[in-house]
Image (tube, rainbow, N blue to C red):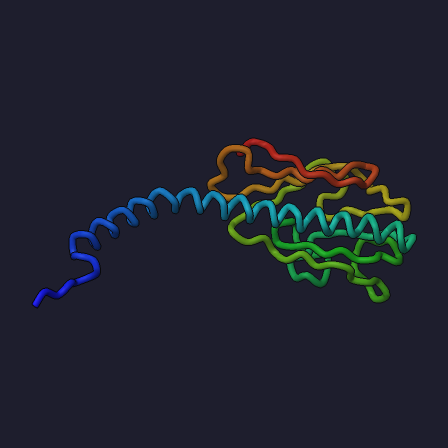
Length: 172
Protein backbone atom coordinates (compact mmCIF):
# COMPACT_ATOMS: atom_id res chain seq x y z
CA UNK A 1 0.00 0.00 0.00
CA UNK A 2 1.21 3.35 -0.99
CA UNK A 3 -0.22 6.19 1.06
CA UNK A 4 0.32 9.80 0.15
CA UNK A 5 0.86 12.09 3.07
CA UNK A 6 0.08 15.74 2.61
CA UNK A 7 1.02 18.57 4.94
CA UNK A 8 4.12 20.25 6.25
CA UNK A 9 7.18 18.66 7.69
CA UNK A 10 8.58 19.93 10.95
CA UNK A 11 11.50 21.55 9.13
CA UNK A 12 9.19 23.41 6.72
CA UNK A 13 7.12 24.67 9.64
CA UNK A 14 10.24 25.90 11.48
CA UNK A 15 11.45 27.77 8.37
CA UNK A 16 8.08 29.52 8.03
CA UNK A 17 8.10 30.52 11.71
CA UNK A 18 11.64 31.92 11.44
CA UNK A 19 10.68 33.99 8.38
CA UNK A 20 7.51 35.25 10.12
CA UNK A 21 9.58 36.24 13.16
CA UNK A 22 12.05 38.20 11.03
CA UNK A 23 9.25 40.01 9.22
CA UNK A 24 7.52 40.87 12.52
CA UNK A 25 10.79 42.24 13.90
CA UNK A 26 11.10 44.55 10.90
CA UNK A 27 7.46 45.65 10.89
CA UNK A 28 6.85 46.45 14.58
CA UNK A 29 9.03 49.61 14.82
CA UNK A 30 7.46 51.02 11.66
CA UNK A 31 3.99 50.21 12.92
CA UNK A 32 4.69 52.08 16.17
CA UNK A 33 5.63 55.17 14.17
CA UNK A 34 2.40 54.94 12.16
CA UNK A 35 0.33 54.70 15.34
CA UNK A 36 2.08 57.70 16.90
CA UNK A 37 1.67 59.76 13.75
CA UNK A 38 -2.03 58.92 13.55
CA UNK A 39 -2.47 59.79 17.23
CA UNK A 40 -0.92 63.25 16.86
CA UNK A 41 -2.90 63.99 13.68
CA UNK A 42 -6.13 63.02 15.43
CA UNK A 43 -5.34 65.15 18.47
CA UNK A 44 -4.42 68.18 16.34
CA UNK A 45 -7.60 67.78 14.29
CA UNK A 46 -9.68 67.63 17.47
CA UNK A 47 -8.25 70.95 18.65
CA UNK A 48 -8.71 72.54 15.22
CA UNK A 49 -12.32 71.31 15.06
CA UNK A 50 -13.03 72.91 18.44
CA UNK A 51 -11.49 76.23 17.41
CA UNK A 52 -13.32 76.26 14.06
CA UNK A 53 -16.61 75.42 15.79
CA UNK A 54 -16.04 78.26 18.26
CA UNK A 55 -15.41 80.75 15.45
CA UNK A 56 -18.44 79.62 13.46
CA UNK A 57 -20.72 79.72 16.51
CA UNK A 58 -19.49 83.20 17.44
CA UNK A 59 -20.54 84.46 14.02
CA UNK A 60 -23.79 82.48 13.93
CA UNK A 61 -24.94 83.36 17.45
CA UNK A 62 -23.52 86.90 17.41
CA UNK A 63 -21.99 86.12 20.81
CA UNK A 64 -18.56 85.80 22.30
CA UNK A 65 -17.45 82.14 22.32
CA UNK A 66 -14.72 81.01 24.71
CA UNK A 67 -12.41 78.01 24.43
CA UNK A 68 -10.57 77.40 27.70
CA UNK A 69 -8.44 74.82 29.48
CA UNK A 70 -10.63 72.41 31.43
CA UNK A 71 -9.20 69.51 33.37
CA UNK A 72 -12.68 68.50 34.57
CA UNK A 73 -14.41 69.13 31.20
CA UNK A 74 -17.08 71.21 32.98
CA UNK A 75 -15.41 74.46 34.07
CA UNK A 76 -12.41 76.58 33.07
CA UNK A 77 -9.79 75.00 35.32
CA UNK A 78 -6.15 74.07 34.98
CA UNK A 79 -3.06 75.43 33.32
CA UNK A 80 -2.24 72.69 30.81
CA UNK A 81 -4.07 72.39 27.48
CA UNK A 82 -3.14 68.68 27.29
CA UNK A 83 -5.54 68.11 30.21
CA UNK A 84 -8.52 68.98 28.01
CA UNK A 85 -10.62 71.97 27.00
CA UNK A 86 -14.19 73.17 26.58
CA UNK A 87 -15.90 75.58 24.21
CA UNK A 88 -18.99 77.50 25.30
CA UNK A 89 -21.21 80.42 24.36
CA UNK A 90 -20.09 83.10 26.81
CA UNK A 91 -23.24 85.21 27.17
CA UNK A 92 -21.76 87.67 29.68
CA UNK A 93 -18.30 87.58 28.00
CA UNK A 94 -16.44 86.99 31.28
CA UNK A 95 -14.40 84.01 30.07
CA UNK A 96 -15.87 81.45 32.46
CA UNK A 97 -18.74 79.01 32.12
CA UNK A 98 -21.65 80.40 34.13
CA UNK A 99 -25.37 79.73 34.47
CA UNK A 100 -26.96 80.78 31.19
CA UNK A 101 -23.88 79.94 29.10
CA UNK A 102 -24.16 77.05 26.66
CA UNK A 103 -21.51 74.31 26.56
CA UNK A 104 -20.76 73.60 22.89
CA UNK A 105 -17.91 71.09 22.81
CA UNK A 106 -15.70 69.15 25.20
CA UNK A 107 -12.17 68.03 24.38
CA UNK A 108 -10.83 65.36 26.70
CA UNK A 109 -7.29 64.97 27.96
CA UNK A 110 -4.72 63.94 25.38
CA UNK A 111 -3.50 60.36 25.63
CA UNK A 112 -0.21 58.71 24.80
CA UNK A 113 1.87 61.22 26.76
CA UNK A 114 1.27 64.00 24.22
CA UNK A 115 2.20 67.55 25.18
CA UNK A 116 0.26 70.63 24.08
CA UNK A 117 1.69 74.06 24.76
CA UNK A 118 0.48 77.50 23.74
CA UNK A 119 2.47 80.59 22.88
CA UNK A 120 1.66 84.14 21.84
CA UNK A 121 -1.90 84.35 23.17
CA UNK A 122 -2.83 87.31 25.39
CA UNK A 123 -4.33 84.84 27.88
CA UNK A 124 -2.56 81.46 28.06
CA UNK A 125 -5.61 79.63 29.45
CA UNK A 126 -8.35 80.70 27.02
CA UNK A 127 -9.13 82.02 23.56
CA UNK A 128 -12.23 84.11 22.93
CA UNK A 129 -13.90 84.59 19.57
CA UNK A 130 -15.81 87.81 19.01
CA UNK A 131 -19.14 87.94 17.13
CA UNK A 132 -17.15 89.06 14.07
CA UNK A 133 -15.23 85.75 14.12
CA UNK A 134 -11.98 87.43 15.11
CA UNK A 135 -10.05 85.96 18.05
CA UNK A 136 -8.97 88.09 21.00
CA UNK A 137 -5.32 87.43 20.14
CA UNK A 138 -3.12 85.49 17.75
CA UNK A 139 -0.94 82.61 18.83
CA UNK A 140 -0.01 79.00 18.27
CA UNK A 141 -0.30 75.61 19.90
CA UNK A 142 2.52 73.10 19.65
CA UNK A 143 1.54 69.42 19.87
CA UNK A 144 4.23 66.79 20.35
CA UNK A 145 4.46 63.12 21.28
CA UNK A 146 7.11 61.21 23.25
CA UNK A 147 9.89 59.80 21.11
CA UNK A 148 9.18 62.32 18.39
CA UNK A 149 11.35 61.95 15.28
CA UNK A 150 11.42 63.83 12.00
CA UNK A 151 8.65 66.33 11.29
CA UNK A 152 6.00 64.95 13.65
CA UNK A 153 5.31 68.10 15.71
CA UNK A 154 2.01 69.74 14.76
CA UNK A 155 1.63 73.49 15.15
CA UNK A 156 -1.92 74.84 15.27
CA UNK A 157 -1.85 78.52 14.35
CA UNK A 158 -4.67 80.88 15.31
CA UNK A 159 -4.62 84.21 13.46
CA UNK A 160 -6.09 87.42 14.88
CA UNK A 161 -8.74 87.07 12.16
CA UNK A 162 -9.77 83.80 13.84
CA UNK A 163 -8.58 81.52 11.05
CA UNK A 164 -6.98 78.27 12.17
CA UNK A 165 -4.33 76.29 10.33
CA UNK A 166 -2.02 73.33 10.95
CA UNK A 167 1.62 72.99 9.98
CA UNK A 168 4.29 70.37 10.60
CA UNK A 169 7.63 71.13 12.14
CA UNK A 170 10.73 69.31 13.29
CA UNK A 171 10.87 67.55 16.63
CA UNK A 172 12.85 69.28 19.36
